[in-house]
Image 1 (cartoon, rainbow, N blue to C red):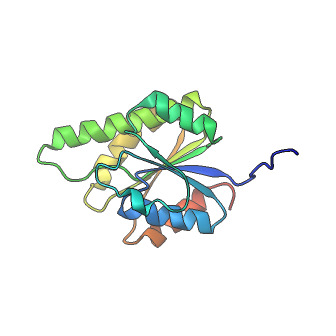
Image 2 (image 1 turned 180 degrees about the vertical axis):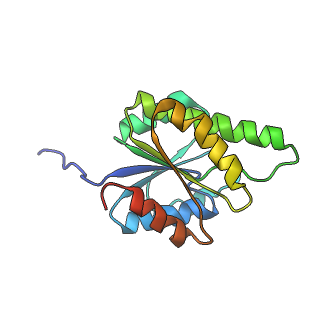
Length: 165
């Protein structure tokens, strides 16, 4: 008997066990997409991951990101793991930059198409734009900052960027 192939498009949700990420995963699943949650659970909760598989790892581990993208045939990353709180603004910028660079390097290696950065309310638009300019543009990818007061608002912006819709 042949194995049935799931035709659902998979989306990597980095930080998908966090407050916003798990709600976005729920919305993606409701829209007929398969969220694959990528989270080190440093601030997120594994119990929140109910709408797709959980890959427990730090997103700065580029080889693991590549493997996950390839295993699930993922073309789109939704990056919800941008950090916005730190006593050291330089360390905060470096962490956000290195995480985003890792995701973009993995996207390039796995021949993905897009990354969507979800802007936490406390992260300034200027910092997010700088991260995009320093990372995404260097690789020639589509990169879109999105932000909103609720996960539903963020999802609507993401939905408008996905070619499926």
